[in-house]
Length: 280
Image (cartoon, rainbow, N blue to C red; front, side, top):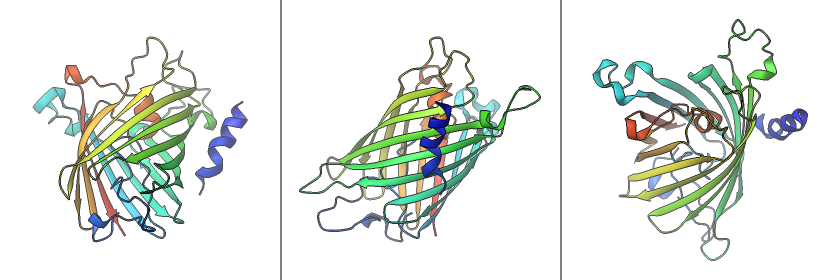
């Protein structure tokens, strides 16, 4: 079973905007619906958007600590998680990614594929697929003496189904399968399932409000972790997209925010973060 999981996830895992963001980056013909999303993520969840062919994006992401302690740690500023992400468009229908997150010192290789596009008078939705391989280098062999390299690995497979409902409103669902060879909570199954939902509402030509939520479908009973709920805004400027958001899950990689979120909106344990996207 473990070999089958490896093959499923490893195969695709190995290998923004232009000056005028308002026109979108992926127009192909008069019937293709464009600009469903303006960034690669809603907040936490991937969108159907891909990087254009031969385009390179650098994404710098910060997710600060919980705001609950106020000025004691400057609303979480002292406990930030940082991610550097590099994305390159191989073709019109595929891009590849490499990133490093300070949460668990995790490296990721990922890819995204365009499977279908929404048409004005035809197919009613856009569909993409996302796969990833994670390497958790933060696990300490001195604490876990039986640790092997394979225990550091995690895998993600996700299908993203989106629709631009109107000129201002877009929505999507994201069935997700992910597998972790090492889980933090012992009764938790290594193979886990989740369903994500997300939406974007365009306020002006440059501002939108975004939100997403992930429902973990087989979380172990008694688990200390929670489902991720996030809300934020996107600001589009020439050559940049700037995303600002609040979420109850500090990790930024899919396996992390789905399986290790610890915040509580009602108790004030949530995290401020931002993503800065630069196109080259």
